[in-house]
Image 1: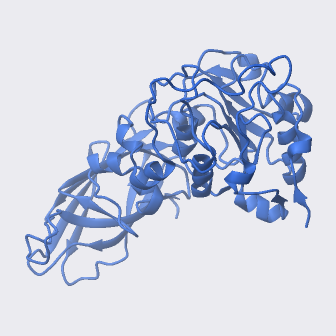
Image 2 (image 1 turned 90 degrees about the vertical axis):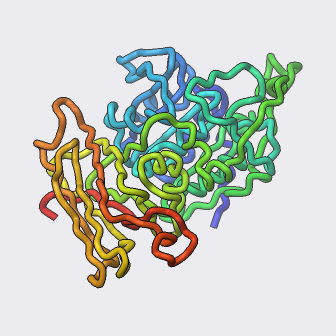
Image 3 (image 1 turned 30 degrees about the horizontal axis):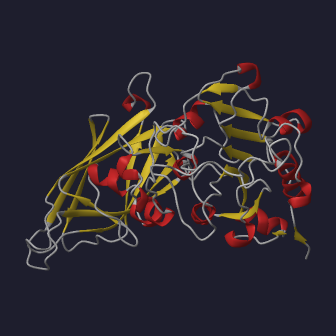
Length: 410
C-alpha cells in the first residue's frame, strides 16, 4: 500500500499558503459527498480555503466572518462562538454530513470544533494551529467569547491538543502545511473505507512544522513566527478540557440539545463529562461510567428542534434509587410548562433498564419558537446516607444513560 505524502501537492491559488493544493489532493483521493463546505474566518472571502473549491469544483456552502458579508457568495457576517455554533449551523441549514469544515478565527478555533454537535460530520477538517508550541506540548488558550488576537503567539491550540481533540471526534491528523499554519484531519471511517494511509498519520512530532509564517519572499528576513506573549498568560491542556469539563464551566446559559430524528444523546462518558458544569446546574450529578444520576427533586434541559413534530423522546433509565425504606418515586414530566405525564416507580418491581417516552406534539410548542424545555419534578428522592447504606449524601432518583429522538410512528 502506498503511503501518501501531501507536501508535494501544496499549491496556492486563492488560499493563504498551499492549502488549495492539499485540499484538492485529499478530495481527489477520498471523493466528494455533496460538495458542501463551511469556512469560519474568511475576511472578505478573496483569500480563503474554499474559494478554489467553489470556482473550480462547483462546490457550494457558507462562509462566515465576524466583520464581512457578501450574500451573493454566501458569505455571512456572524460572530461564531462556542455558545452559538450549533444554532448558526441550523440557521444556514448545514447538512449533517458534508465535505469540508475550515476554521481560522485566531483564538477560539479549538472550542468551536469541540462545541460542534457530534451529528455534524465533515469528511475533512482544516484548522489553524499554534506552531510556536513544540509537538509534545498540550496547550490551549482559555475560552472567551470575546477573545481577539493581539498579534502575539498567545492564541489557539498546539498540534498535540488538536490531535487529542481529533481522537475524541473520530478523526486522524494527516498533515501540517510547510508554513506551520494549518492542520488537516480526515474522518477515520473515510480513511478506512478508502484504504488510505498518509505519511506519519497521528504522529504529532513527525507531522509538526515550526513557525515559518514569512518563509517566502519578500519576507524571508523577518522573524518566522509571532512575537512572544509579554504577559506570559496561562494555557489549559486539552486533557483538562476534554476530561474535566473546565471549558463548559465558563460557557454562559444552559445546555441545549439539538434534536434530530434517530439522534442519540449520551449522559455518560466524554460528552457528559465535558458538559458536566452546565448539567450540574440543571439537575444532574457528575457522570459515572454508564449513566448520570438526576439530583434532588428537579432537573431540566432545553431542546432545539431540528426536525418535525410530533416526535417521541425516549429516555433510557438504567435504574431507580428505591429501597424498602424509600419504596416509591414520583416524577412529573413537564414540557413548556405543561404537565404531560407522571412516572410512578415502586420498590420490588423491575426498575432496571427502563424505557420511558415523552410525546411532543405541535400544541406543546410555543408560538414562533423551536425550543422545548423539559422539566422533571421529582418526589421521593433520598440519599444512601439517609438510608444508612453508605456515606454518599447525594440525593438520588433516576439514573439516565441516554435519550433518543424518534419518529412519532415508532
